[in-house]
Image 1: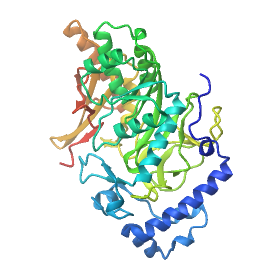
Image 2 (image 1 turned 90 degrees about the vertical axis):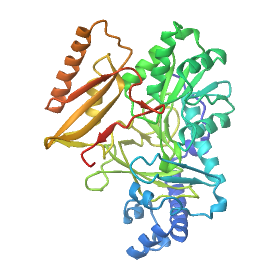
Image 3 (image 1 turned 120 degrees about the vertical axis):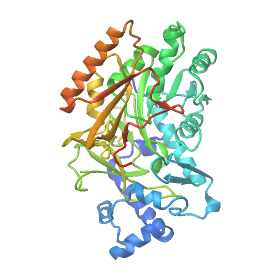
Image 4 (image 1 turned 120 degrees about the horizontal axis):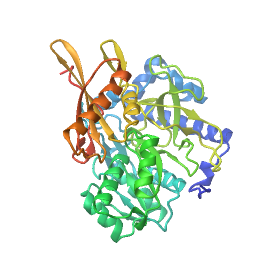
Length: 435
């Protein structure tokens, strides 16, 4: 892997003392904007006896409480706007499957910043104006498709907004337009790989050379499988809708963590149980403060995503901190029979078996006064010749999960794409006990 160009050297290679001073200046402007225009934050500062001018260092940010997803839901739809509605040019939002959606608004400047940040990530991964980029993220209230589309166009690449088209059409587009780069969810990339194989197409006959994947947890095993089955190099990128969507961080060609856009986001890593900062390099929950967002600035937003931060310079020349892949969240732990169950642990166990796909789901319900866990697993291109062979796989997976969980779960084996809902992955955890 060689070096790749840098989209915005001024900010991506800025010495850290200069970067931290820039962060402070932008933080002060953001706190001032939020205090003047957002009732939530004006109330928070007034209750604490603080004024915007009291923020004289980045550490002063820790005087503030966290902003949570519940705060965003209570503010639906316009409660967090820091600009008049006439200055908002677009809205995106979460699905709102567990309550009111979380809304993010964009001014024209917000859209330009977002586009530039995604362009940074794509360039870091090696995409150029010579590429034909096939985007199979969905387009709509979900921000992924639009963000990656805009970033690729900013580079000058040719964009195919195929979105959630049928797999056979995805493959046909790849062939007809000689697609060189794929952008979307890693699990759907594997679905495309399966379709390529079903059509009897040699992946090396395609023009693919790289892919940028995100919007769901994925492992190194999945990266290796995508690369092997599609004949490309796969790169990770990270975003969250509350920060504007994709573009928060992304891998460079070194693939030693995802470079954070620290000139646009101030990132803290906390112990999710205590809320205190963890030592540098330790895993904790990511907390984000926007530094340039005009329409919906957020202060100390708890993402729920667990990761660690490395501030050492990268061989690629970028000086921004790098975050490790997000594989699990602080809020997806289940307690069953007195045992803490993390979906990430289940995922790591399933990764040991080639028959198990990347997608799985944990469903918990109370039966006869006792908690019952069902693990629903997609099979990955595995078609058993006999019921006996299917039973063998079932028993093998059951034994391994019992070792990991310390109790035997109920288990269901599904076919490929069995955990897709309207083209998107089904929720990783479904807890029916509250209902």
